Length: 257
Image (cartoon, rainbow, N blue to C red; front, side, top):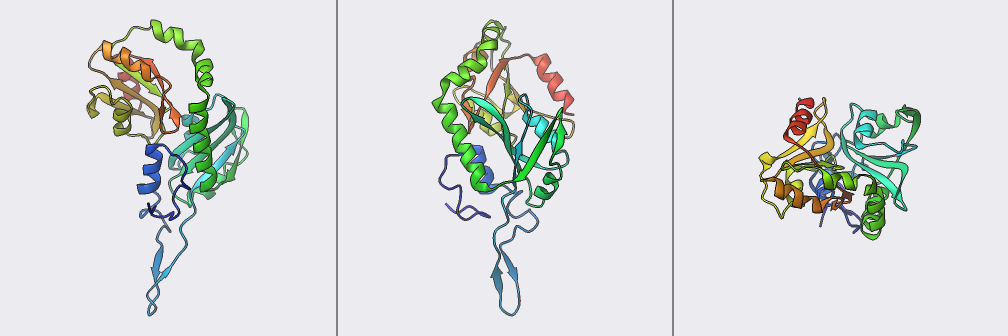
């Protein structure tokens, strides 16, 4: 497969479906990005090939251990965040992450945040490479599939609360990639009958995804059955599910308006 903008593709490494679509079709990288054209006209010799634009990714180090995707988006306020990938080792967050930006030129702006604070910690920001980002994705996929105890230990503190919670037909999803759309969520819950109108991806005050969404199922029995998908992966991310309510859904949606 030929990946426009990056001819050698994703090095054959496993990617989440949405991330692969981002690389394959993402308009921010191909066609609409400044400097993304491969060819320029130089009469009378015709078109001359240009090298592809650099992949717009930076690496962060020193992140707080309770850091979320929303915190990273706030840290890079004003930049277009396509994806945030947190790095784990042995089931524990390392304090590092990769952040994919909308345009190659935005990397320079992101680097200006080097050694600025997120909470009480200063965060280091480095240039990175596409290959390092894809390698991190492959490692996260491998770890999430090969270390089931990681998910069990992380969830132990609130699993009992989930089991006892009353189901109203609404579930809250946490940990979604910023690039995830309604079609990805429908595929995640493909065993249930859902419509696009029943899926609500929440936004912050600037209209950017928060990494959370709410799904309205046909009834409480379906939402309870759907909890079997808790901590299963969407792409390289495992998604956490929580019983919710129409009231919580309405409040979350109204905050993003």
